[in-house]
Length: 154
Image 1 (cartoon, helix red, strand yellow):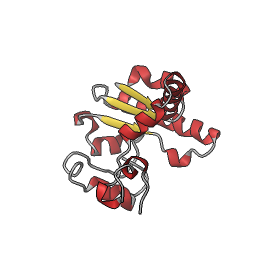
Image 2: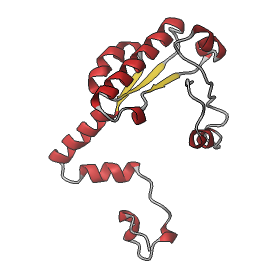
Image 3: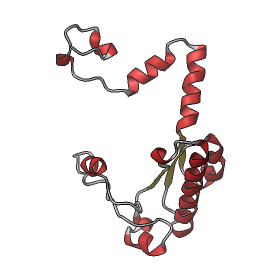
């Protein structure tokens, strides 16, 4: 659910085979009771609340975006207390406010800090984790096999 219309890239993603029968996009506000009734959040398998990283180019904007995420979590918890909530935040400080109200909290900056710490303890850990998470294009695009690992194209 979002106040804004669905972007073309998100629409394409939701129409893909992986998501078309699992995810439904509804335009509205999670803070409005009528919109929560419309999306049947009490019957939902889960609610995912994602902070908008594109709005958070500066620290103050990240704080405001996290505050909005906390309000959304509280709204879902009040209206649908049995629906599991998964939250993505921008700042580690926000995790404290939603940890007890959600099943799982993911903070991008915390993950970055953890990877940085591991790379200090184990040189190359950041590269290993990035290579495990990031998908490389098919081998046919490269002249030599070693170029697959480093993304060097023709």
